[in-house]
Amino acid sequence: MPVPVVLTPEQAAQALCLSPSTLAKLRLSGNGPTYCKMGRRKVGYRPEDLEQWLAGRSHRSTSEYEARRVD
Image 1 (cartoon, rainbow, N blue to C red):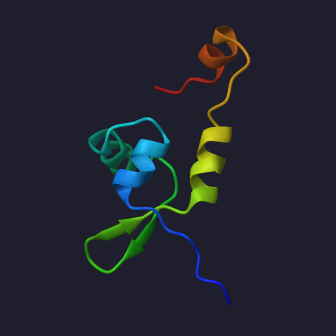
Image 2: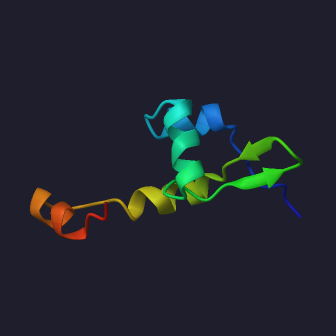
């Protein structure tokens, strides 16, 4: 059984063009990508979860974005 690739929060933030603190805030609010909790403090992100999160945030126009936006 292959071991899945897990990115650190720093690596995930870089892949998403976000700062690590922004990614941490998204994790806290529940608006970020799915993450894995490994032990008490260690957090990791699977590449497929990052891709899925990005795909869910894709828009064709600004009007489409405004219609789907949740504050």
